[in-house]
Length: 240
Image 1 (tube, helix red, strand yellow):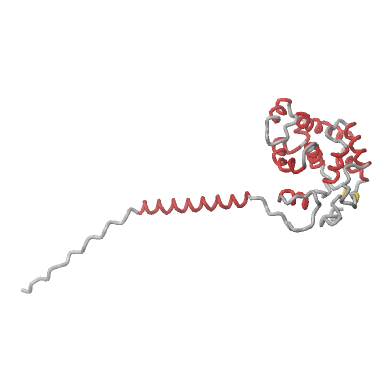
Image 2 (image 1 turned 135 degrees about the vertical axis):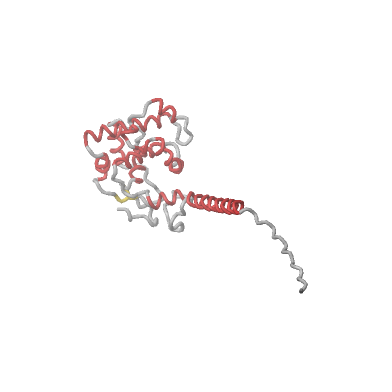
């Protein structure tokens, strides 16, 4: 009988870590990466868009701030014909009295939020209590006459629409219904004209406030009723 060879006993392998732990770690890492990616994307999205053509020649009042360049290139002087948009612009031009437009421009989105998107029918229903609360809001110009003035203008606009129909046609009538060519000398900028004088007087007669002739002319420039882009500005003559 042959002798049996000794059988080697296999060394037991170390027990593998539970799959559930490995799976949890993988899921956790994936979630973290996914969250980080989402946050990064959100951060990128939240950044203001770079203004197009930052090196073009612009009006001297336009600073190098992206928000101002974008406003100059895409909005200022572009003809507005919509009643609500004209109402918003007229009110915001009034808010800059004694201030700079850039101050109001930076607050514009918040104004839209707290003043119901400048829908006159909604603003006209604002109570005194609501307006008093708005006077505590640091996101707007906290001047009592200006804050209450927006409601007053909403009421005046609704009355005008009821009588004449179109707020836009009423305003554009002061320039004959089409955009006028502005001044040709950037050294002596115009701040009022016979047309802005007439608009101011008519608006005041109808109950509007913060509509002096200087504000009305700034409004006419911004709404495209007058093409006042300065000589040499790349936008001059492109909106008419």
